[in-house]
Image 1 (cartoon, rainbow, N blue to C red):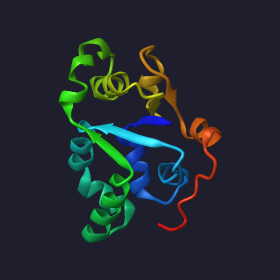
Image 2 (cartoon, one colour; image 1 turned 90 degrees about the vertical axis):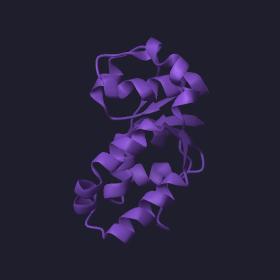
Image 3 (cartoon, rainbow, N blue to C red; image 1 turned 135 degrees about the horizontal axis):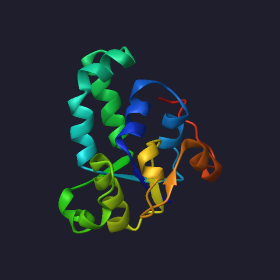
Image 4 (cartoon, one colour; image 1 turned 180 degrees about the vertical axis):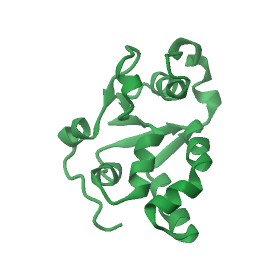
Length: 140
């Protein structure tokens, strides 16, 4: 199942071992994210590292492991859909555009703004757990 993952779900997986991380490492899903999410995460890297209580090396390693499960989409792969996907929150646009460009089943996000649009289906953790066969990441 092809899913676009929002930066807030990547951050949740970074900050602590949780259902979000379990889902992220479930082989049932193929996760993609627009390159925009990298800049969002890097913008808050120090704050996230402190919140996760990780050293720089630990944080970078975990981020690297997480991105082994996520395909990063360069802007040119979804830019044709940006105009179509302008919504009230400009931060949501790249995710919706990436979803349409890749024909993904939806966007995994807990952002309330995304739920108010009609361009793409929005999945929460509960939705994805219902599709999952074994959302476990105990090996991390």
